[in-house]
Length: 145
Image (cartoon, rainbow, N blue to C red; front, side, top):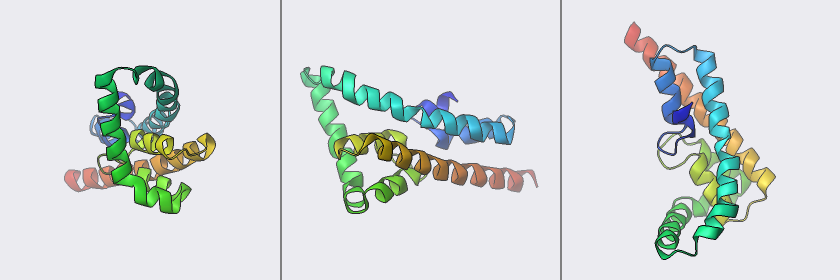
């Protein structure tokens, strides 16, 4: 679960970690998915409250602008062009830098409505989790065979 809320892995690391440590395959999926979904409201709160307060400090502001530019460069075209579907697809890609953290930041930067952003992120997390879960299970079957 901790890997699934971590920005260093999200469910992309939490699911394989749980499966390789012999946790029930369905429990791993549900817990990692739910933990990853919880990131959205936490990040949303951070971006609206704490981020606004911390932008007063030069070093924080410089780092925040760097992260914002990276998020816009990596996702801007797809999210601007396709809106909800672009954000959902972006979050659903099970590759580094495209999870719920980046999706929430992108939704914040592009002024998405909170309900739509949450739904797009949740569906994207679900798709990504299914891909990682099924791929890990298939790999484990191949290793065990």
